[in-house]
Image 1: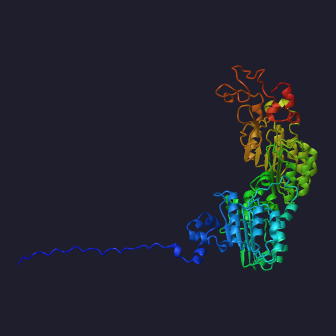
Image 2: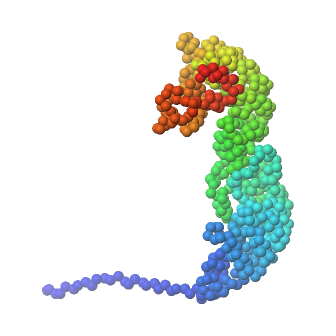
Image 3: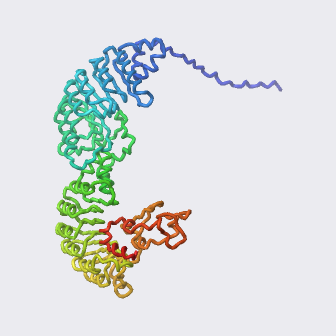
Amino acid sequence: MGGKKKHKQPIRPPPKSVWVVKRRNWLEIPDDVTAAILTRVGAIGLLESAQMVCTKWHKICKDPLMWRRIDMRNDGRHHEMDELASMCRHAVDRSAGELVDITVEHFGTDDLLKYITDSSSSIRHLRLLSCEYDITTQGLVKVASKLPLLEELEITLCFNISHEAVNVVGRSCPLLKSFKLNKEWCTIAEMEDWYDDDTPSQVEDDLDALAIARSMRGLHHLQLYGNKLTDDGLRKILDCCAHLESLDLRLCFSLNMGGDLGVRLEKIKELWLPHDSTKGKGFAAESDHFCFKWTELPDNVTLSILSRLGTIDILENAQKVCMKWRQICKDPIMWHTIDMRNRGYECYDLVKMCCYAIDRSCGNLVDISIDHFGTNRLLKYITDSSSRIKRLRLALCKRISDEGLIEVAKKLPLLEDLEISLCRLSSKSLEVVGCSCPLLKSFKLNRLTDAEYDDVIAHTKKNEEAFAIARTMHGLHHLQLFGNELTNEGLKAILDGCPQLESLDLRYCYNLNLKGPLGKRCSEQIKKLWLPRDSFADYDFRFTVRGYGGSPRKFGISDLIGFPRMDKDYDENGYGIYCGFSSDDSDWYDDYYSKPPLEDLLGLDQEDMEFFGLWEGMHKGLF
C-alpha cells in the first residue's frame, strides 16, 4: 500500500551559549585595596597618569601613606632631568615626612639629596642609580648624619662618590644591613704615565673595600659589582663583616681568590663570583653594550689571545679595556715575549715602555724584538734583567754598536735565534756572539746593499762577516744573509764551518757566482735555498715612498736608484704620482719639479747613507 512519505526534519544544533561580560566598576573596590594596587605603580606613573583617572583615585594618590615609598626609576630618555627632579620634590612633599624608601635614577643631584633628607628623618632604604657625576662625595657626606635609621643603601654608577663617602655613611648609619656599590666593569684608563709605578694603583684599588671593612661591620648583604678590590681588600671585608650572608663579587676581575679565601667564602650563604652570570643584576650599565662575553672566557684563553698582540698595543690599549684584562696583562707569563716592532715614528716613549715590559716579565723574558729605538744601554738593561733569553731581534737600531753587543753577549748563554737587520754592527761583534752563544741555531744578518752598485759600497770587507760566522757558529741550522757582500770564498767557508745548515737565504748577495760547483754543492747540502735573484716579496724591510699626490708604494733599493719612469707613475691627466706634470722628455723632472734627493726617499740621514755606502755614490752622480 502506498502511503505518504514522511519528510525527516533537519536536526538543528543547540543554540550557542551567550556569555554576558559584566563590566567591573573599579570605583566599587575598597579604598585600601585600590591603594594597595596603585602602590605597585611607580611614582612617575602615579603623578602623570593614575591620579588623573578619576576623583577617587586622585584623592587616594594624595594620601601621605601612598608616598612612604617613592620609586623614580626611569630610562633617562623620556623626561627632562629638571622635570623629574621637580616631580620627585612634589612626591617628597606629599609624603609629609613619612618617607621610608626612595629610589632616584639619572636625575639625582646634591641639592635634591639634601631636600630629601631634610624632609624626612625616617628613611630606611635609599637607592641612587646612574646619577653619574651629579651626586658627589661632598653631597653624600653632608646628608649622612640625617640618615640614622638607614638599613639599605645602593650606590650604582655614581662616579663622583668615593671611598670617603662610604666611610662617613658607614659611621653615620649604624643600622645599615645591606650595601650595594656597583661600578662600570669596563672603563678606559685615563693615565698618561700609567706605566711609571703600579704600587699606588694597587693601594687605590682596595680603598672602597677598606672603607666598608672599617665602618660597616654590621652588614648582612654586600654587592660590589665591577669593583677593583684585590684579595687583600676582600680578606679585610671578611675579617670585619662577620655577619655577611650574601656577597656579590661579579666582574671583580682583580680578585685571584688565592690563599684561604676560597675556604672562607664557602661560609657565605649566597655568593656570586667574578665570572658568574650577570643576569638579573638589577641595573643597566654602559658596559652592558660592550662585548661582554669576552670577560667570561677562562683567563688562560684570554691570555693566549692577548699574547698575540704587540707589546705597544697591550700597554696602550688592551690592558685598559677592563679590569680583568688589566689583571691578565700584569701576569709575568704575558711578558715571556716582548714584541716592540714599530714604524719608527710612534709618539710614545718606547725605551721607557720597553723597560716597563721587561720589569713585568720578572726575569722570565725569553723572546724580545726591538725596532728603531734600541741603544747599548737598553740592550744591557734587557740582558741584566733576564738570563733566559732565547730569541733576540734587533732591527734598524743604529745606536747599538759593536761594543754594546760585545758587552752583553756573555749574558746570552741560552740564545738560539738572533736577528740583526739594518744595524751598524761588524764582524767583530758577530764573532764574540758566536763564541758566547753555543746554542745558536738561527741567525739573520740583513743589509741594505745592492750588488749592482757594489763599487760604491765600502763599509766593510766583503767576506769578514762570512768568515766570522764560519769560525764561531758551527751549530747553525738557519742562516739569512740578505744583501750581504760575501763572495764565493765566504760562502764556501760557511758551508764548511756550518755543516748542519738546513736553510740559507742569499737574496741580493750579488757578488756570488753559483753557476759552477759551488751552486751544485748548495743545492745538495741545503734543504731550503734562496738564490740572489729570488723574489724578496716576503722580506720585512722595504722602503715606503709617499708621493705628493698618490698613495704609498713599496720599493727595494734597486727600484729607487735611478728612479725609472713607468706608465703607472702617472694619472690619466699626465700628472706624476711623485711630482708635477710629466712631459714626453726622457728627463721627466725639470727645474720646477726636480727629483727628490735619495736620502729623502729612503728616510735616512747622512750618517745612515754613509754607513750603507750610498752617500759617496750619490754625490758622484752614480744614482
